[in-house]
Length: 126
Image (cartoon, rainbow, N blue to C red; front, side, top):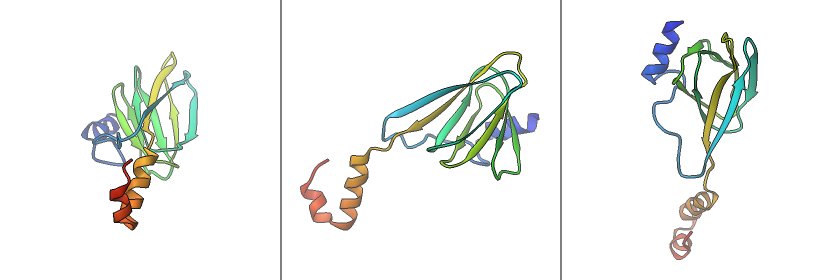
């Protein structure tokens, strides 16, 4: 179990966060409590960083051959569409947070416009 946390601390394997998500848009943080001796599961709507606040949590990811024993302060990068399961052996509820960033749609359209119509993109400012 200690081996899983060492993998998380190195930040290089299995989608573990080694940097920041694209911070070009507004930051969205969702807090979830994992009840004692319960399992929580969901599918992510967008890329997110999962952070553990105050107690250890067991993380299982769909189609990942490894499970992770996460300690407080550990961070894992999760991808859009991924299904995850979290469970806790703690005697109290464990708080986790999911941080993602909304994309700036004006910038996205400006990039598309610049790619296909460079002259129009120079004339229009977003």
